[in-house]
Length: 610
View (tube, rainbow, N blue to C red):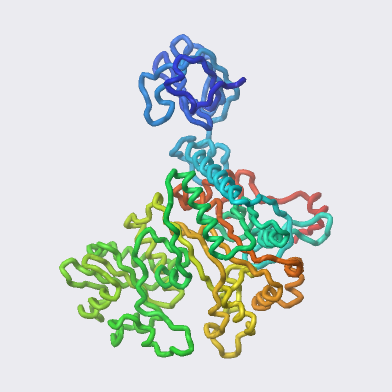
């Protein structure tokens, strides 16, 4: 056999044993007539010791980094112990040595801290995967995968595969399409999720289903998004929302216990979508720290409230001749604890940060609540000390705090303040990646109104059910908005979805809903989204037909597996938790894909060049 042990297995209790190791040479160190070699495999690193007699033989055997070698010898105690590695108490006195394969000089150092850039390491991903960092990430991924499967199996779930070649139903993200050679001019699509299949499995009576499954979306990329990604896809029949939350809160706690060795005993907090937007400015709040948004002025979108003054919650803003606050639709603030000593340079840096195109604000106001009880602001010309004190009181600011204020259009300002809150927390070191704060966000709107398209769109997806007490509102009202009628006065604007998201440290790691299972309600949903009866039947006739044959109440959730692994690994980017990821342009630079296909394939597929 090639080896008796791995390079991470030997300890002091193995001293005196004759062993054989195989692996890759990580480093070679020559000291006069003796040589040390660090031998690495997936399991760790062991030092090889070549004495003076054996070292002479190495002169005829050129060695280099990443050579694949086999070494036999006796385990001996190491004189210069290395407490940074598990095998640091021993080394191998080599008596036999063989080069199994030589290697070219690697294009970057294959060590914890490499000198290779992102694109270079992705081109040589097979080398990058030898680094300890990525090995640990993939080990974590495997551990999470195994833990998820064990938990779901214990709860009676079956792993059932669903097709990868399906029908294209372009709703939401773009599909990846696959031409069919045997059906000229027709195409399959790769699934964005197994959504309709898992609902059909509920109709079939398989009441607890899951897959850890590849999904595909042809959309713009970012750190936590890839064109192909993996999700933990689950569905349950004869359940209500509470059953889903309890089951998958249990899943997270089980995975955390397996991975971190610690218990999470408390129930996850739950916050409504409306409260999340009001207090945090987004629907995936990071609750590891405070600094909730303080609403000084916000727009009312109800027919009964029209006066601009009625939208001002902080009395100190009234009667002030200051165009910035008077013209703003929304004014929001956050209190930064113990930051009143910020310098002009620091406040200027934050001002420039919010002016970036990605944030889109025109400026930033601030009030310093000095420790001596006085106030200093960037708007002293317009707000006297009494008004500044009133704003500080409204915001709950204490002496020593810094109040940051943004003013402008509602959607942009709320989003900008949510981003500013996170940026300030980063600068203050309040977002500890080893501190895990999960929560559920519930009661999302069922619909959003697309003013450009003059139609409703599904906030989640078109198979999500309204909250039980709002089904009648949806059934009994025409989804069309009358001429001159603002969308926010339409009954559909107030319908809440029976949907939920699992959020961890400011990142959505999963979402799901209780599904529609009645044909008439599903047809009403399609109509609300602007689908004609013919279009709904052409796209989803199979599902509507299935609902006529005893569909049970059901619901489910999909968790982003790559994203979950990255967060549990203390990182935001999912790329280093995927063995062979794509770059930011959606390309596999190692394979050079996507690429052109040859003329024979084009002819067989009957695809003509443009």
